[in-house]
Figure 1: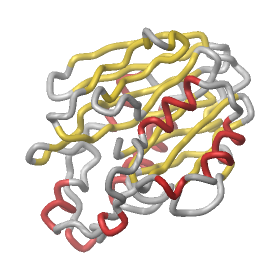
Figure 2: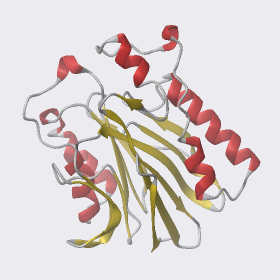
Figure 3: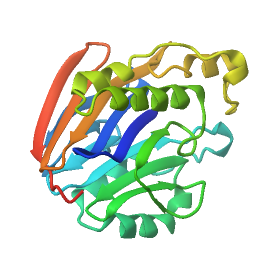
Figure 4: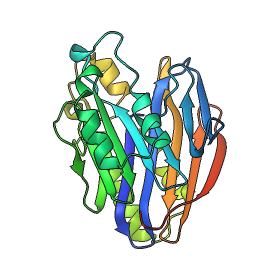
Length: 254
């Protein structure tokens, strides 16, 4: 996943609102969002190549989402799958803070990642290139393939669009959030990050919604968790534009 926009305890009726795009090679096999047969408390998409996930929730009020950190100079050949970090958390019962503290002791084994995990204790962020896990305060955030709230053009545009939406609508519909993710505007060259990839690829990867040769946005996901115990997870898969929804009980304590 390459972009996660989220509002945490920012709207009184919705403790957690998330809009996220997963970007991946088109040829990589993927299962759409669903209740998992081998872990029926979990709902999310699934990477059929490595077995993990990029975004998911549980009926017990756990949430996890992942992006890769883009730095080709630091790649570790044959490193463990980062998608397993989210699926392991979702399938377990370890508190979010403790899970990240334990993970931080072996995080150097992995290629760069950003991980969001949440439960009744709060929402936490951890990047294995940045140090200790961090508990998040209420607010609106953006995360792409660098650290949380790094002001890449797509992050700035996405966060501002989400803020404007929430200022207009106290009760945003899933389609309102999905619409934020369809922005295909390419950033000007002087605003592009320098992450060690060719300039042409920096351009291709700069929109919120990516369409590049062999690679692009594969899924747009929205989570709307309310304060009375309901969660709605909506996913649109690309390029087919097929849509799936999962509704689940959601502990209001989140």
